Length: 491
Image (cartoon, rainbow, N blue to C red):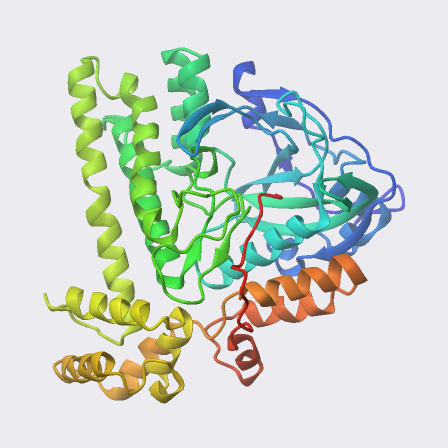
């Protein structure tokens, strides 16, 4: 544990490659200091992986960095510029309440963005106060860490601090700042912004930066920019398939919320589905169901088409041929998505090999689940542990017939029953961040200052495939309510 001038060294090892891009891409700005920052939660495992000193982060000076009151050595804070199609409508945006401190270089050579979210106004704030309230920052912490536990690519949450100040929304709410860790904050909307505000050379600079940061193995003699498009399509197709497999609903899949790295980013009105229904929407602002669970795969390719449009000037000197190359790459999305999805669904049902009838077997089960309003996660758990009597499907003629076909399907593969059970255990989580459990944790924290409920939930979510007795309580369903569950864009 090193010290400098009597102070613990936190271990910041920051570089600023994004800041070295042309001025078009960002605006230099320091976070706005807050009145009285207090650390309320620190992700110690993540801090260790970043080679950061936990005790130093918990110190007064460490908390000052996490609150934006002190700039760590090596940082060059900035707000990133980007645009986005929000519910299909193009808007010029940018980091309206977030500041990128820099990029932490880990001992393993990883480069990870360190961003303060809720750190004050920037030149992109458009009249907003640049602040965030405690509840939404804790929500992002919980859901992003749950996604990490599920093995789904995601940004991470390092810490949440309260500011000692109120933010005014519908009511006065306690202010907070989240420290977000990401492979990068490059978005589809970043490329849209440069397409609108820059020139072809600016797009090339951004594309080269993206390749160097995320896809460094591309050969010089390849069509580098076509390769970039193909790789981003591949990552997004696989990412969204993984969302579907666990019943995750992002809630606001605008192009500014699609990361080029293939990570899940921007946890606003997100939630996990209880009852299986492709039309499920939780977001209070998604009144038309554009971002409903069942629409997420199609929205993925819609967003990727906007990315492809930004790359067209780089794909070929002849625009017609460039468009043809882009269209060819986009046509691969459906296959990439489906292959990941059906492989995951086979695993959830304990199926090792492939048969052409598997598609109908899987979709028939989902149809039955929708008809009888079965819980998505718990149905697969019941199948895993042979407790179908615990589901609403038990005894129904449709499910009885389906179950017989499923058993025959399992009988046609060579793997043992034990191997089948193990595959299902590893593919069906015992726990997801149930909406009522998340709300319970947030209410205890925000209203009562009690973080123990959240900490216990996070511990259970850290290994969702453990199937431990302690996780069973988190599988219970919410009490029925006359009002549908709604989430809000508070992050």
